[in-house]
Image (cartoon, rainbow, N blue to C red; front, side, top):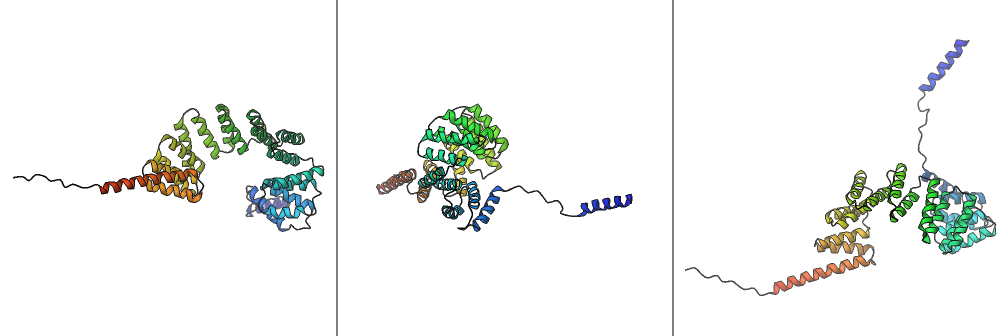
Length: 361
């Protein structure tokens, strides 16, 4: 009987190894795809009979997705019979604040306050509204209340830093950005912002240290490459700065921010042919870049290719007819062309004299 059991065990093990496709491959979680699919599914079932919980759930997803177009339908339904919910009223306030309808945002946040809202989201939005209204002391009070509720929410420290930076207190702004980054060390935007503040204040060692820290998490971040280049530019090491940008662009030709910055450096150095190549690459990627059309116009003007310069300025004006720089460039080149034409015409009108040479005997 013992041998029968062993035979069955070995048989099952051999079968397990022979069955193909038993182990499913692990796939990375795509947050954006998940949010889009969930929002689509919930929006499709949305109607006037939707429950308060369903509306709040959908509102949370829409907020995470920065309020896409589906939020319009959600707001129409949420405004209906559910305004006695402090949480839903806060969400509506956040939605209207995000689209710039600040008065409506204040109406819904006031309603949430009437209903006794005490959440982090409520105080966070109150702080942002107060900042918009330039009521900075009130804004700091609101964000401090939110922090008392949740001291581990990095976004609250970012909001507090924004308030201090708005009123010109850079030291406090840096301090609270550091606190937020301590909670979420991988936050690229916050890290890049703090680094830029260090660079602007001449705290270059702190900037480079933070750049290296962020590069461990985001080695391909364009902003970090540029900030590293700025570090070397602070010490007049222009060649090192350019080499960083050139190497990064050679690794990935779609790093257009770095291409633009390299074009700026070439322009400042007077290396116009190199700057022109960079501008043409950028315009091949996006022909609506006004600044690059203007750069091309300036370079061709300096090199005395006036027809090409005029064409570049007019391309810029076709994109933005209010561009003073492009308009001034066009006028300058037209004046040069007019002067050259008048000079040529005057030259053609000069009398010609036949020079007689004495005949030889």
